[in-house]
Image 1 (spheres, rainbow, N blue to C red):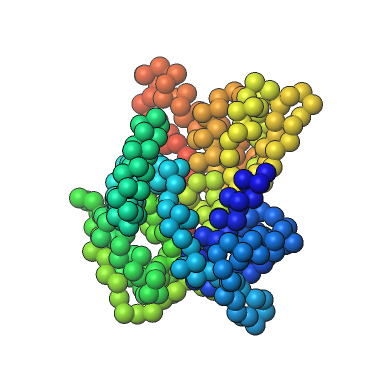
Image 2: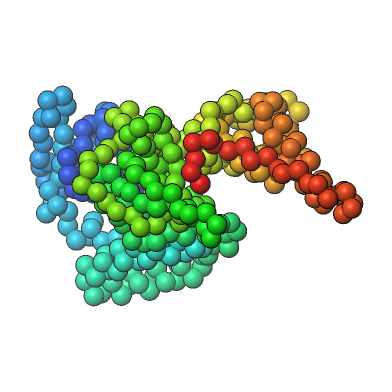
Length: 349
């Protein structure tokens, strides 16, 4: 227990040193996952170990900060676990074919190692190398998130500066690209990368695939998301990427699959209920019914869609399309129906 408290004090000291604005007691409590009184004791312990904290009143609450000079070399050296996880994060991006972002993490790793003393760097390098050799990532099947690094960099520049961008979108041999001028709202990373943006002439956000954006220019025209737009909340509306009106989804997993389903995060809003027969009921609120149906196919007969009816209908359409393709005789496939393309009407993917 004493060791855990010591680790918590060091963790808080680092947070107080790197946070430019400082932390209030309530923020310290949230950061440590403790009550306010415990946070006060931890703050006092930081002062005893590293010296008096700077503090200022922001008009509402007192904010505390530890001068960087208060942290000695021991507390500033990264741990083996921290450097291993940094390398693992880069390798996970590589497994998803995202080499550009993986390279940025590797550059950060190199900068951290360069700042260390020779002995610390050599010892840390040996231990991290041993840890990394013992871990790997499975090959991820799915679309490669291709995007031009210069496009991604320019969009980040526009987001930070609050500027409108214009670009050519899409286009194939038969179809010319469409010209777009939009206000960037944020970037959404998934199996593919998307720009979430809006137009001054219409309401709501639209998705643009980064690999379909060409000739992007950051203009001098100011443009920022609406004050009430929340990118995290926007992303949480859907099971996947595509946006549509969220619905209350209820899934029932058979007893044989209940244990595995409990370990799976279907959606941040989900709730789990153990049923008397050993089955598991999962409830969440989200759109993207086609993507939900595609995922549920991997659970086969172990899952039953209880609600909504719209999701049941999408699943029936998808199963019927597969049956027509794989089960019906080849001679009866002369006039195949197109499978459902239920997705967001507000996506430009």
